[in-house]
Image 1 (spheres, rainbow, N blue to C red):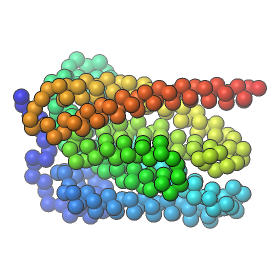
Image 2 (image 1 turned 60 degrees about the horizontal axis):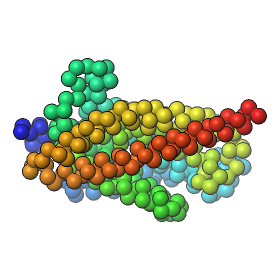
Image 3 (image 1 turned 30 degrees about the horizontal axis):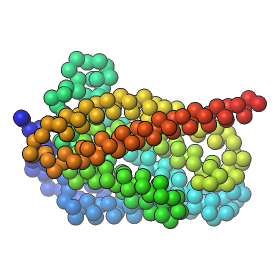
Image 4 (image 1 turned 90 degrees about the vertical axis):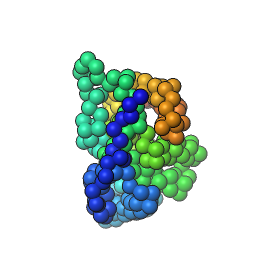
Length: 304
């Protein structure tokens, strides 16, 4: 069996991995050392804290414009949902979109119905080849989850959210350490988070997780963000999810069933990814049902 081209085998040019270089794909021409990964992750998480703090300062400066902003807790909630959650989801979504054709052009060929697109024989390359741009997406996604876990514990969101973040850590660990499924990263760690970005904005209107009274103070905003979230969820998490998952499941099953000693260390992570995808897909079916029920209820209230 022929082995796929592996960028790790290439000799990387001499690079000074400053934080500015970390923002460039060139910094990941070869897989960084564990020490470099830890350093850049710490810097990125620090930047995320700084961005959220900056949003807090802006809200504090303009608190006189809206009575709800006069309460510090409300400003902290908005700063978290906007400065961390919304910002990070938008960043990974943009990274996924901007690098999509570079990393995984086969999906476009498959969507166009091109003959021979996404061949089964290429599964090994798609599942086990290191991709610099995918690694960058995974690194930022990991840093976001670190900040997210901190916020979840600080705000006592509950065990369900803790479990979700732990599962994210487990999956992203496999992509960073073992470089598994980099071909599929732009969608699952990037584009699919577009719907989550609008969910983060919609969460501000929730009476428990968001700012109490915001839905009454700005009902149009709740409707607008609700419609955008529902649209992006159905597009990204239902239609596109089904399309991309068809090929991921095929690649994953081939990687699991076709044994190759050179890939044994990474093979268990493929099983973890497949199990995670199955569980999340089932949850999204339930969430779709909830979205439909809420939409009917809201629409009924508007027409009443």
